[in-house]
Image 1 (cartoon, rainbow, N blue to C red):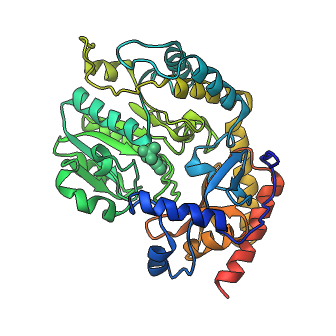
Image 2 (image 1 turned 60 degrees about the vertical axis):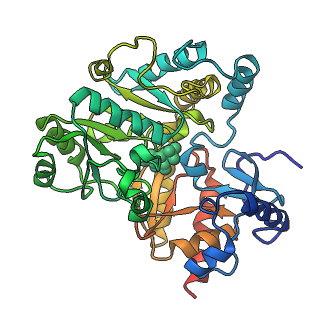
Length: 430
Ligand SMILES: Cc1ncc(COP(=O)(O)O)c(C=O)c1O
């Protein structure tokens, strides 16, 4: 099979899903917990779909994904916003291959390795001013978990203030923070974080002050632009108000930039647009360039609240600072700078927004993190998939079609998507 170029338009050779995908999904269904991958039978009931098995990914490059039947797609999700540089960026692949051949694993908190040290040094250079001390993790949830623990040790307070529509991962330590879907938390209510308060995203200062008034809140966690909650941009000046209210009440602020960070919204960090620097910043997704890696960045003062390790680290895991992930992340950070990814995301966002609004669509978001407002997002995702475009819905009522494409999406791919969207919309509204 020809290697993918990354800037191809869709090329479909079977119905979607094709026979090879169907056969593999049958195996998956026998051996994977049924809560993970939606299949046609269960989704048919909930979504009214006749045939909704996923197609099975085989290889990916740039903005292209190919399935096991040889169908080529254009990925407008960048794989949950991970492939910001494009899938399998050559610089990341080279860094991973080099590192995995030399040292695939080191010993977390016990013996450090060069890849981890180099990454921490590099992260400090690109972090917002003052946030030059980090706790590394493997997932976004790990990074937010580290922020919650850091705030507890730094403030002595157990409480967290979070926002309706917010999403910070589903691991038990952070599950209670999400305000996106009650169904995610309800079955585990008895074992989730017991001190979380939620207020509306973008709420007035008085609401923030009220929620913080009793002095139990040590941390306010906020996405500068809500992702899964519907690609929602808060009102101008609101992030600054959140910081002012939190600090006045003796709480720390963590920005969850796991989706928004590293150039996605047109600047290295989304909160730059608001001129706000938090006490803690969580980054992940694009950071590892496809390898699982995340970080909670903080100020030295806040991070020193942990105290020095006396031999047994208070916060660690077997794969802390995984060398291959760290080598990949250093390559990612270099590439973001050398390929001017923030500027390219800003330009791509303008192109997509202009073309979509010219066709009458309402678009929200910032940079290359956009939501097309539509009541038909679920049906559109399936109709677009049949046309070779991968998209996901977002929002508590699936009210937007979420676009987080690779920054490398070509002009022809962007135009192809805009045309396919209209075609798909005509089909689902017929
Ligand atoms: C803003 C935000 N925070 C945290 C997470 C959780 O990251 P992970 O799924 O890697 O745990 C996500 C994932 O979508 C996210 O969008």
